[in-house]
Structures are given as C-alpha cells and as structure tokens.
Length: 297
Image 1 (tube, helix red, strand yellow):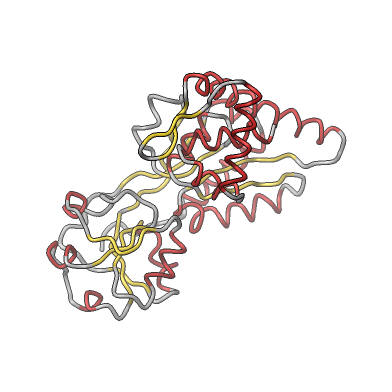
Image 2: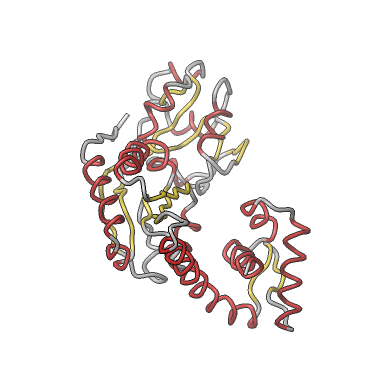
C-alpha cells in the first residue's frame, strides 16, 4: 500500500525528486519503490520526459483506480479505528498561504477547542496540489482563490469569502520603500523573489512583463525571511501586510495596483455530509466576515 501511495505522489507531481522531497524520503529510495511496484505489475508505469516523468499507458490505468481506492481505504481505516476507540475523527484541509497563515489559525484553534474528539489536518499547499487533492478525495475543504483549472477536472462549489489585492513588498530600508510612487520601470529594474507563485503573478501591468528573479522558493515564510534585510522585492497578497510588518517588510506604492480577486472555500458537495465539516465551514464564514483585507496601496 505504501508503494501505491508513493506512485500516486510521483504521478501527481510529475517528478520523482519533487515527490521524494514531499514524502521526506530519499530519491533513490523512492525510485526503488517505484521499480518494485513495476516489477509487481510486470509493466513500466512511467516514461521520462524533458521535465521529469509522466504516466505510461499502464501507469494511467493504475493511477485512475489508485486515486479512488486510497481515499476509500483511508476512510475505512479511520472508521474502524474510531469504532474501536483507537483514533479520533479527522477533517482534512488544504490552503493557500493567506488562509493558512493569516485567516484560518484562529478558526482552527476555536474548532479544535470545541471538538476535542476531532483532529484537524491543515496543509499549506500550492494550487496544483490542492486541485489534485480535491479530485482524489483527499481534502474536505480547500481555501484559496478559484482558478479556471478546477472546472474541467472536478465538480466543486466555490464560495467567495474575502477579496484580496496583490501588493509589492520590500524591506523597510529598501530604496523603493521611501521613494513615493514607484513606476513600472522602477519595479522592472529590481531583482525579485518568487514565493512559489507563477512568474507572472503581480499587480496591474507588472503581470505582463518578465522580471529578473533572484530566488525562487516553495513557501511564503521562506520568501519572507529572504526578503528581510535584502535588496530584493516580492509580489504577494495584500493580506500579509500586518504579518510582514512584524519582520520589517513594507509595501511599495505603485502607480498601477491592479484589481482585487475573490478568495474563499472550495469543496465537493459530499464534504457537507459530515457535521464536523459543516461546523468548520460555519466558523470560517463567520471569521472571514470580520476580516478586512487591504485592497489598494
């Protein structure tokens, strides 16, 4: 069963190295596990491409069934352990950075105190992982922006809860911090940090221009620590203003702040069959209604 889970992780990420990093195992160990699975089925499950690996026809046949079987087996195991009194009920949530770091911590604390018999699993994940998790039945609720990528692959509901803008941030001692309004040319002259977003993420006209990226990282917290005391700049949600201020990171006034986007909860209808999921969602709605994110610099 472990090898099958590892196979699904490689298939979802299209890379053995990326899957090994996520699973916290070595790349050779993961390669051996996949090879063992291929020997068991008597067929190659992956073929290499320029970017990593992709499923072979045999692998596609296995993957389409594995992503349905594994969540069902997990639910069965949890139910058996709960009936035996050996495990708590669980709710599984995936979020983007804004929800995971700014909005949901208070909701999760309150929920956990009200439900001592439930364990809450919260994963801050990129959009691709959140989408794949919804499609495979891994997550009960996903919080973040709703991309058009969701529509063709999974039937979900999207409930907007907050609106956020995209700001440009820098260290408080950066020259642009005290310049006044920075022009597009000012911004394009800088070196940038990418906190795991697409390279074209940014407000207004900036999103249509290539930038000089000095560092790309996987998490906003890593990017935040790199940005502090550095000559770099970074695009991120307006919801981080207060959090970043604690680290000496400020916004740059720009002449084209762009538009705000809806952000909220995404879930398959079946998730609401569970009372604990409905209660978490109710608490998230109530808290989000009190959150007033900055919209413009």
